[in-house]
Length: 115
Image 1 (cartoon, one colour):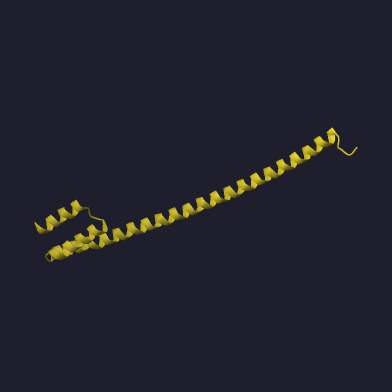
Image 2 (image 1 turned 135 degrees about the horizontal axis):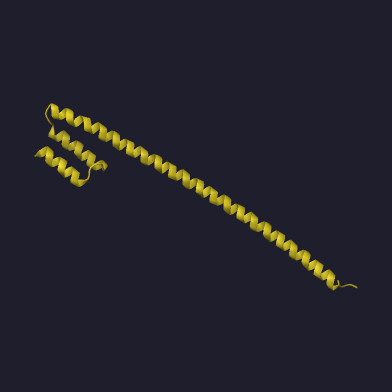
């Protein structure tokens, strides 16, 4: 009578297996929740970085447009009173350094001033 019967052993095995399954399922759900939270955090950070990059790009474009707008009105005023070739060349060089003018555009504008 010291040993459990076949039914008792089967019942004990079922309880152990059921407990293991429940624990395993709980651990899997917990890990899935942590993975989901980590993914959502990464997506949020990526959105924040993208928004910052977009804002910086818009600011850079606005600064370039402002610089171009300031340079454009100065040219006709100088032309009306006589052109200062050195000043105009310096403005063109500054626009080229800022990347507003390409090498070809700079060469054409320079040729117009000098020729």
